Image (tube, rainbow, N blue to C red; front, side):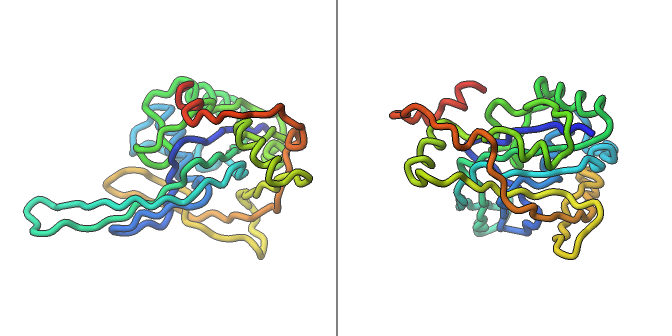
Length: 240
């Protein structure tokens, strides 16, 4: 088994799985359907493509930086309507996630890694207004999913790490871990987040079981950094 790791970070992210009508919610972690959509776009697949090989990937997320929930107020007017409709869209701002995709098919993971580095179509973190910052693909790790997520270094900026050190001088961060559960346990949550089709004529999603695997402290979290006195909010954006 090998695991492909992705770093999902950007000014805004939006991972809705239950949005309806005029309120578009976001989950607090990337959805599997959203990440599969990202992979399909990188590969250049059409919306009616067969997603079975991507849907079969074992999926996991580590929250490296929770970010903040942001609500965007908008108005929409339907042609011919007298009044505008009020809509709300929720986003995560300044969040960072480590995503893992496990498979026994190394050739598939290498294909996905190459596609993410040279995507056929533009990539977004859930919505078109949410482009990712680089690096996005972190490459393959020749270990199973949970181990890869536990052993990968912390993916936050030096500024964020120094801020943690100042606020918690003798405490290591505890990052939450969520994994697909092929054999559901009693404590597993079932979510409708496994895409069968993105075809606009008939979007269809299946269920998957998810369990929390406690918290993890990445191996480099306790390494002290030199003082960082300036924060460049656009440092990542400039590298994209």
